Length: 186
Image (cartoon, one colour):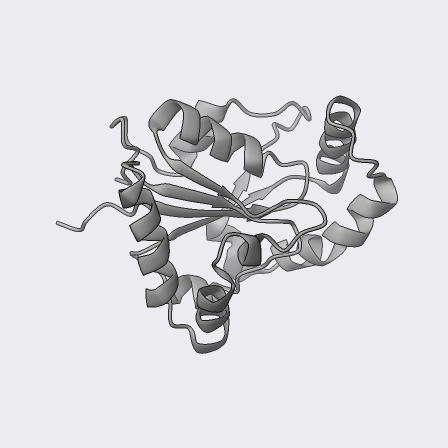
């Protein structure tokens, strides 16, 4: 039997709820949340993960990155770690294959319209002086990236066809979580 995978990378478009989903898991399931999506900063560097990330991205060597993240959630007595990335950070399917069995990667996705609307609604509540032009500038590459067929199996659509956000537990279920309190993958 395989050990459960207790590291999750959440990537995708701004407005899909990456940080909200990660915060939900941290609060309700005792996971460590590393928020790498902080405006005006380099999240990997601020979290001390830049060197390990670079080795993973360039050499496809995930061991230093996985070891560091694992060490952190274990030292914190957490069930696992979930990292929410900015919309500008992408992981190619070949790199995802290199970390298979160690990290689960999910791209939260939705239509441009739904994500932009969600982003602008968030800005009303949590104003950071970001506008539609900011969203377009920082998400166009991700939109094109997510259209690649090889990434389809890693994508989770967060909006219903009506434009409403899908319930969090429904998203977690689609991501393959069991009902165990530690959210080990099935």
